Length: 119
Length: 110
Image (cartoon, rainbow over all chains, first blue to last red; front, side):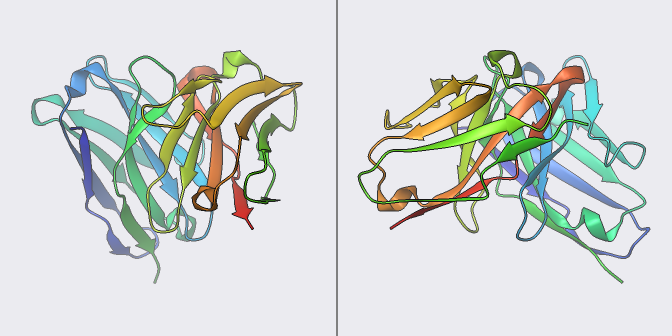
């Protein structure tokens, strides 16, 4: 069974940093492209970043480019999101999401971890 | 900048058919955008419904179907049920390996 478990969320002051983790199980990490998708309270979904484990192909949304950094540890089936220079508008639930092997779409989602940026 | 549009809200009576759409503020949605659809209930993560325009995710009933209608992607729910009441999101794969979500449609079944 595919499982994705996020951790590392919490309260941080504007300008601060936070590192999110995603632990995957039930599949081989290196085979799939992994993503972070976020959802601000009461708002819609926003794709944030992606990484393909075996090749390290990395992409970012313009809203986080230069501030966030995505990485993975394939040996541990884990993905990370280093978030720097955090702003109030980064407040959201951050989901770890697997991209389907066959389709350009998201087939499995974690439960999410809440990041709150507030003074 | 790519902006994806969805109806903010939609209401349907039980048993009726409803079609939600996913468009672009500039240009037309085609299969080349690999439109996919997700539903989300409060407090839960989204769940996949449709991949690549019209491929149903595992376990999704055939009441849910995807298509291209005119210049938009569409999600059709045939015979709406009370538990179809959810937020529905589309997402498009755009150039450079990035995705853009629509703003979501809140579907009410009453």
